[in-house]
Amino acid sequence: MESRVKLGHIWGIPIGLHPSWFFIFGLVTFSLAVGYFPDEYPDMNGAAYWILGAITSLLFFGSVLAHELGHSFVAMRNKIPVRSITLFIFGGVAQIEEEPRTAGAEFRIAIAGPIVSLALAAVFYVIWLADRNVSMHLAAPSVWLARINLILAVFNMIPGFPLDGGRVFRAVVWQFTGSLHRATRIAATMGQVVAFGFMAWGAFALLAGGVFNGLWLIFIGWFLQNAATASAAQSGLQEALRGVTVSQVMTTECAHVPHRLSIKELVDEQILSGRPQRCFFVDEGDATRGLLTIQDVTAISRDEWNQVTAEQIMVPWDQIQRVTPSTELLDALRIMDRAQVGQVPVVVGEELVGMLTREQVIRYVRMRSELGL
Image (cartoon, rainbow, N blue to C red; front, side, top):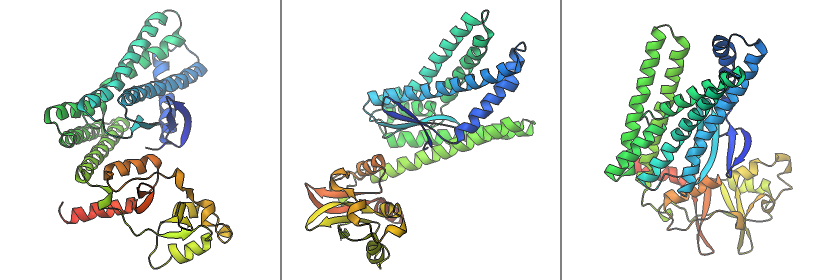
């Protein structure tokens, strides 16, 4: 879940918005301004409803952000990097870069978000108690935010993976079985059961005449079912690749090009040749100066291909992530994912011995599947 609108950083974590967030923000604001506030507080004027609706909606998403920061804080305390936090149509998601190393760490990370939501519910409830007879403009959003944070905590504790409750359930199963893979399979199955339960509930609501609620429940169920299936598949892939090293997958046939080769010559002679390549080492004499990929080429206007050389658009060697032949394949994939690249050079000391690409990993996994492994 990648964000398109960047908001800034908290604790070094990029915070952003997915485009779907704007839809749900508008929907929440509209429902508050047109439905909730006029029904609960009929003495306000029309403008106040909309202002309070927008402010309350922002505070709601601030609460969702705090929920995700709770997960992120505990993850970082357990030395697990957090790539980003994105707010989207279903709330928010913290992209934690790797699985926790222990069941205890998984439990603490999963439970942190609901605890933050419960704490916020208590804070907003205290504000409502203090202001209910003083200022309805403070009391009105406070009681709604107290309720919604309580609902957020309870909903996330449903034992359907990958909800927080599902992750807590996975941590418990992991603790008893000693196997993260087995715990993930069990938790993902439970998540699918919960997802189909939501979809059945939504279908019943549709038949009862609640069109919007029914469609929303079906949509939530569909989202959870896909997420649970993807999590199970990812766990299966990780289990299949466990113990596999880079040396078993990498290629030693690496394409090298001279540093003064023009992009036009590179495209004609290498990329569109009989044995097309997607990445190239750029050499000056016997020394490797950098790495050049198709993405670097496509970033240059075709009108400039004759004038621009490989050296001018390559990524310098000292800025490139590298792995060794003995690196675990899963660790190499995490390195590529973290650097957002599709390939990494394989080195022994400072000597270049090969290249690992995502395409090679995909071919390796497909071959294992065909062999029934």
